[in-house]
Amino acid sequence: MTPTSNELSFFDHLEEFRGRLIKSIIAFLFAASIVYRFVDRILASVIKPVGAVVFTYPSEAFLAHVSLTIWGGIILASPVIIYQIWRFVCLALTAQERKYVLIFGPLSLVCFLAGVAFGYGVMIPMSMQFLLSFASDTMVPMLSVNKYISYTGSMVFAFGIVFELPLVLLFLTKIGIATPAFLIQKRKYALVIILIVSAILTPPDVLSQFLMAGPLVVLYEIGIVVSKFTYRTKS
Image (cartoon, rainbow, N blue to C red; front, side, top):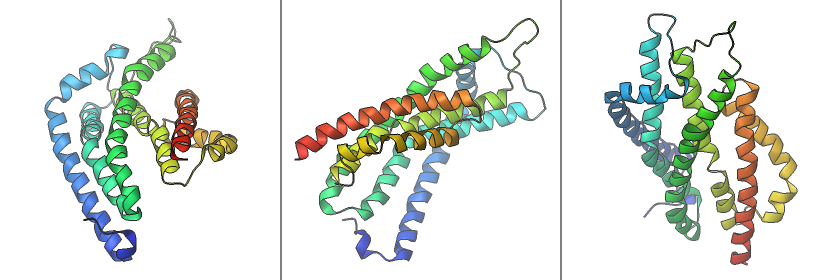
C-alpha cells in the first residue's frame, strides 16, 4: 500500500522522488540502447519528409545519431516514465482519488503516444512542406542534420506533452479542483498561457509556436467539453 503525502516527511518525499527518477533513468537508458541499434533505419525514416540533409562539421553526423537516440529513448521509455510520474503523484491523493489513477494512468500514455504520432505523422511533414516551398533558384535548402533532428524531436515530444491537456482538465474536474464554468471563465488567460507554453516547448520561430498553439486551443476546448460531461455525471 502506497503511503499518503501526510504520512511522509519532506525527506521521505525526496527519497521517493529519487527512487522514481532512478527507475525512469534506467528505463530510458535501456530504451535508448534499443533505439541505437536501429538508429540508421530510424534516421532514414525521419529525414524522408525533406529528402536529404547535410552535415557541416565532422562531429555533426555523430551528434545527430546521439540526439535521435535520446529522443527515441524518451519516447520508447514513456510507459515506464509516465507510470513513475503517476506513482509519485499518488502520494498527494486521497484513497478515493487514487482510484482514478487506474484509469488516467493508461489514458495518459495513450494521449502521449497519440500526440507523438500526430506530431510525427501530420505536423512535421506539413510544416516541412510549407517551409521548403519558399525555396527558389536563388535559395536552395541545405538542412543541417543535427538541427533537423533537434527540430523534429522537440516538436514531436512537445505534441506528446500537449495532447495530455484534455486528460489533465478531466482529472482536475474529477478531483474537484476545476469546474467547466471555471475553465470557460478563464479561457482568455488560458490562451495567454498556451502561447507561452508553445514558445517554451517549440523551436524559437513564430511558425512552430503557432503550429503548437493551434492544436492546444482545440485541445483546451475539447477539455472543456469533456469536463462538462464529467461534471454533469458527477453531479
